[in-house]
Length: 370
Ligand code: SF4
Image (cartoon, rainbow, N blue to C red):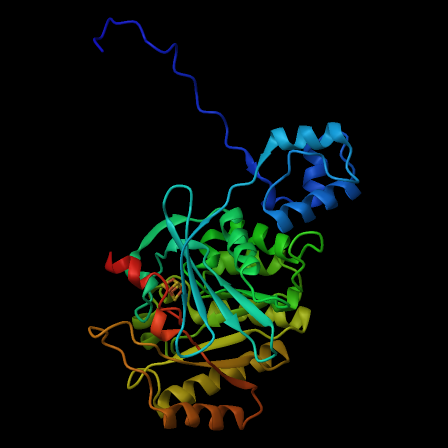
């Protein structure tokens, strides 16, 4: 079209503001947005959205027609689309890949619990991650984009919809792709929806936010979440120079500052954080590392008045070019015996689904390979 030509399809209009996603709204927020809708109706609508994944055209029982139809004009019910389901051949872990409406791929993992029929949903909060942790496959993707809260919530809903009969999602861990504190607003909204009885009804004590740690984000998270939500802090190494080499954010957000916040929170709530420690052979598994970690735990105990939990994670290699190897089992035993022997609860976290790249640190690997 030449410069002077009239526009063929009328004037270009500004884009309509995006509709809010119904799945990210709580009952009181619906009441606030829809004139005439009462709280009981809003709870019914929220429950319906999380059960069906949509708002049916026909007004449901127990909700008046006018406010319901007004609500349908105000909100949308977008979904992720399943593109791949990869059950592990070595354990009952299942990895899922979903496509967002813009084509971005979001990965999530269904983790079995010991109790039959109970599962944990491991969700992603970003596409890729910008934190650059040296032992993490997601870091190879870099930060591609934030996920909206509905995109995080929908991972849980979709995993729930694919459970074996009689099973349920018992808990949710923010341990997939991305740093939760770098997408805090969406993560906080997600936690509220997860814990809302009319929505996904997950007990707050079964929600864990796993983080490498950003000081301002952690402070805000701790002041905003339900008391019993658990925080899992990735330690990397208790020796600052070693931690910096593994987790670059140590430079701006040192472990000492993060632990001070967690200790103050634990003192207030009496809920102990988890200290996650991925054991890398010859890197952070030495006796010197055990001594540093012991001193760190002692400092936390003195400040918080309660023991943290230590979660020891076996490393999953990221490919043949990976410079890291798992620590030998005897080093894991040394950590468990010497730290656990002093009264700290120590668990070995089984990180399964390694054959389908569902294990800790492996999400996004296949995307990074292109
Ligand atoms: S370990 Fe977590 S914070 Fe670090 S790069 Fe991976 S996803 Fe990001």
